Amino acid sequence: MRHVAAVAYLHIVIPRLYCPLSLTSGTEVQLPRDAGHHAVRVLRLRAGDAVTLFDGRGGEFAAELAATDGRAVVARVGARNRIDRESPLDVTVVHAVAATDRMDYAVQKAVEMGARAIVPLMTRRSVVQLDARRAEKRVEHWRAIAIASCEQCGRNMLPEVASIREFGQWIADASDATTRLLLAPGAAAPLAGVARPVGAIQLLVGPEGGFTDDEVGAAVRAGFRPVHLGPRVLRTETAAAAALAAMNALWGDWR
Image 1 (cartoon, rainbow, N blue to C red):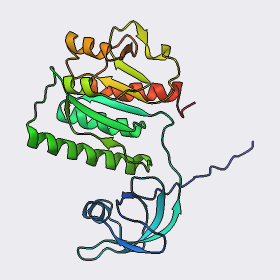
Image 2 (cartoon, rainbow, N blue to C red):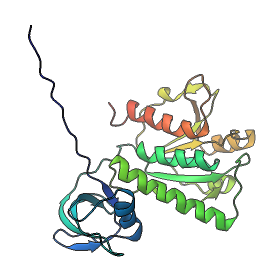
Image 3 (cartoon, rainbow, N blue to C red):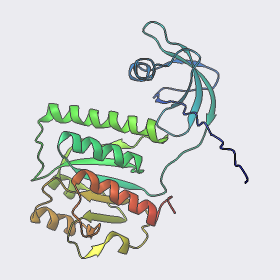
Image 4 (cartoon, helix red, strand yellow):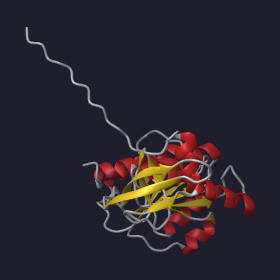
C-alpha cells in the first residue's frame, strides 16, 4: 500500500493598516491614532512585527513596526507594491438607510464585494430617522467600517461613503450612469438578463419595508431598470451583497 505524506501549509497573514499619510520607502511614520491603537491594543503587535500599510489611493507598502512604546506607534516603511484588487465593475451602491446593524453589514459587504462608492438615502419607509448631528456621526461610523473592510479584504482604494441624502433630492440631482438597476422583488426581469454593462453602474436598494410606489415610479422615470434576484425576498442588508456577487460572477473578476 502506498502511503501519501500529509503536508501542512502555513499561510502567514500580515496585518493591513490604513494610513492616510504620505508614505515613502525608507522612511519612518507615526501611525494615526486609530491605526496605532488597532495594531497594539487589538492585534497585539510589537516592535519588529511586519505590517502592510495603504493610504487608500492605490498600492500598498511593506512595513515593520519600529516602536510601540508610549503613545506613539512608529512604522518603518519598506518597498511599495503597486498591486490593486479592485473589481473591474464601477458600481455605486445607493442604499436606503436601514437599522444600525443591518446598515453596518450592508456597507461592510458592499466594500468587500468591490463597490466603488456607497450613497445612503433616507426614504419614506426608512426605519431610522436621523437629525443632522446623528446623521453625520452615522456616516463617520460607516466610513470607519469601509476602512476596516479594506484592511480585511485587501483593497487599496478606499471607496467613498457619501453623506446621507433624501431620496427625492438624490433622484432629482443624480448624475448619469450608463446602467441603473433597481432591486425589486417581483420585477419582470432577472439581474442575469441585463446586458454586460459598459461604464458606471448605479445599484438602488430599498429599506426594510421596500420603496413606496411613488419612489419606484420616480426611480423608473430617472432611468432605473427594476430587476429581481430570484423568487425569494432578500433582507435589505443581504440584497446589495447578493447583487454585487452576481455581478462579479456575470461580468466581473469571478469568471
